[in-house]
Image 1: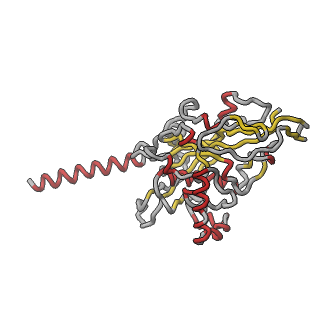
Image 2 (image 1 turned 120 degrees about the vertical axis):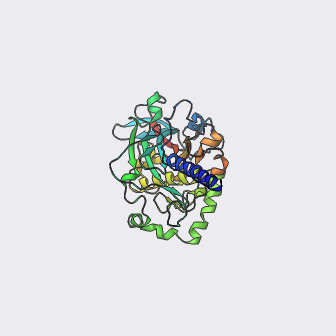
Image 3 (image 1 turned 30 degrees about the horizontal axis):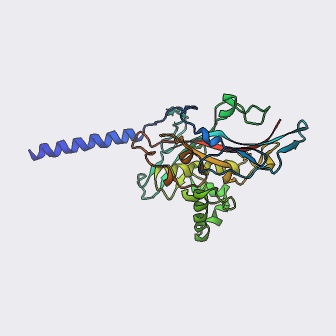
Length: 333
């Protein structure tokens, strides 16, 4: 009888662990609904010069040009109005499963190349802490699709496009290899540099992040190393968001992402090798969309404690997606 109970117990736990293993490897997600899954209040404030129209609760605006009149000399000389608007511009996936695209409905795309699985805690078997994430970056010019604010080229056009896949980047999971491309990481590995991030955390949670502290991701941790390896894993929401923010910072360093805010952007985008953190707002789309301004219009570095409740779900909600809102200043014809 004891043997029967023992064997039954072993079989039961083996089935449970097997089910959990299979589930942990699954790719979950859904397509973003532009009507119900987008926090449209994050579009505000809209500004004409220094005059602001509307607001998003808990999400302050960045500085705008002091004059409502602007002039651009190329490619065609023109005079217009200085428009400022927050546009939903990019989608970002963060998943521990390779080739998993949560914002594409949980689709798994076999890239034909081996890519190691991400992990949380000590699941890698080597005793290391933290977590590892794969991140994907989509072009998502939603305002152009719905025909909002048509102004002869002020906003970005085009269609949905996958612009970056971390599985194809050999430096994304290797801190030492990434250091060869970003050697300045050594300058921010000491205690004083990391302690300064506490001020960035407080500033981002109360308003806008501190752009001069560009090596800080506020309450999420440090921007460096520019990889998907998160040493201080507090929770899935915090760690996945940090990995996503690191990718955007990395794309700025590679001049694949440019500046779109401030007076310098009125006549077009400009190179921004050091990301201006205040240029972006972050809204979760997966697994549970954050559709209110208080939970969805988060400046870079704002504490996730304020909005992460019930947004990390066992098995079915361990892959994350974010909508990246970008401040856009331009000369409106």
